[in-house]
Amino acid sequence: MNPLKLANPVTVLKGAVGLAGTAVGIAGTVTRGTLQVALTCLDRLDESRRQDARTAPSPEPGPAHTVPTVPGPPVDVVGETLAAEAAAERGDAPDGDGLAHEPRGASRDEEHGEAALQRAEVDEIAEEAAAVLEGDVEPEEHLTQPLLDPADTKAVADDLRTMGRAADPDPQ
Image (cartoon, rainbow, N blue to C red; front, side, top):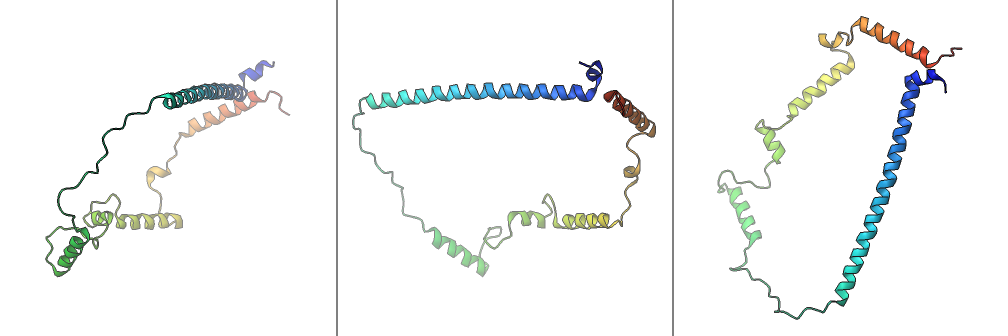
């Protein structure tokens, strides 16, 4: 084997990925086999339990099951609800009673300023996004500065060129 290929990071990475793939394949095969054995054992245990249940003597009849009774007369839920709604329409309902005409919980929170994201904030975000897409907004100063020092960038580029030459010792 060519000793330069051992120094080539691409070749080394390719070999490592190949080994990792082989290891994953072996682990999958072992796991599949183990699960198959476990399922077979569970099936046999279930089969033996069924067989034991068939051969076991039947239980003696016990006392008859009774249906539990609810004390008191039945409650007219529909009638009470209709009466409460009629009282609310007349203005007789106590303060704070929640009825079906109230807003959803999320919009109620929004009215009190407790919602996680207010509709006004959503509108502002949409306006800012539209302005950025149209190019009307200049980016902030910290976004215009380079992420890497120019000297570091040149050093990285030189290293990449050197590694590229080492990876291909026979340039054409």
